[in-house]
Length: 447
Image 1 (cartoon, helix red, strand yellow):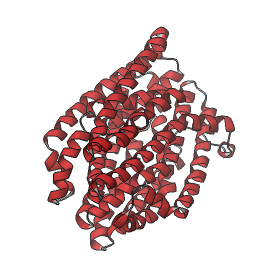
Image 2 (cartoon, rainbow, N blue to C red; image 1 turned 135 degrees about the vertical axis):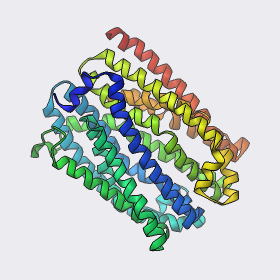
Image 3 (cartoon, rainbow, N blue to C red; image 1 turned 60 degrees about the vertical axis):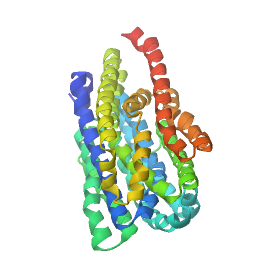
Image 4 (cartoon, one colour; image 1 turned 120 degrees about the horizontal axis):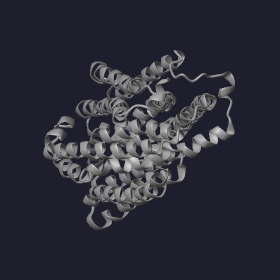
């Protein structure tokens, strides 16, 4: 029995723990790296450094989402192919993924350099923020192709039943970055450029680890030279499912474009720094929900391919319940210890004073995050791109961006913060209503 065959035989709760715990640890370590990076920049470069990282982050993830989308799209196909006992399709899919990621990663990296200043300016790099942002982004761009390759590979590694390896793929860059940050920023006095080099080298370290895993042949998927030649049917399916991820990251980047410019308009440069801290905390707070979401996808995909409808339904139920309970506990801790958490990032009393109420408001609907994420991921896992796309865009696209454009006109800066919990609640209601309807219509009838 291959490693992936466990998805169809072992108890669901055991599989979820086996998949979700390593995924959560990996995301947590990666989030901690982001926090440590912000702490070093905030304390040794200043608030402009935090603002620069905040501006660059959505652009970086927009470009690297190429690999993420190709990875999730291909992983869905591979999971279902393994469940249906068609390994040849799994091999062709993996080969196409590798070719697509390399080509598109390099292409968008080049475009990033060509349009660097207009791009950064559009995302809020104005005034004193522009120069450190250009310094940071021009170095980060070098690592974008390998970051895309790593993100693509991570989804495949989970799909073939190696959650611990996928965890290490995320831990490696975090550890490398945490080691290099103080060396480059403090010892070598490289400032924001030091933070950028530390991050870029960390991407390279992670990509090297992934390459060793693939070379060792542990995926159980046999690759032939012909697998790397684009197969338009498979490529179309990869992009159809992966387009959900592209769209999500595209909308997130549009969100940052709207948000950063609104923050600058209503609160100035300090407000962008405030959101930089909030955004880093969101990464940590969302870790359990993201880990459970990523852990559930290969289980759902495999059992859907094997037509094991009861196991699909049980995986969804247990994922949502555990994600909501854990997120609720973290929400309580965040509300109680808000000032103490913010002081980790900065000793600036004005920045702390401004961040405390903003952070509490934006995190009000945290317990509902798991419901949103798992609902949209479910449809990606089973290969249904349209509902996956619509549910994915619900929060940022249908609710948050319009609210960010409307509310500040009436209540100023506070309207930007209030938009977040309103969007979270609205999106959770829509996602659960659709999933309940679809579950009743399809899964129960098949059981």
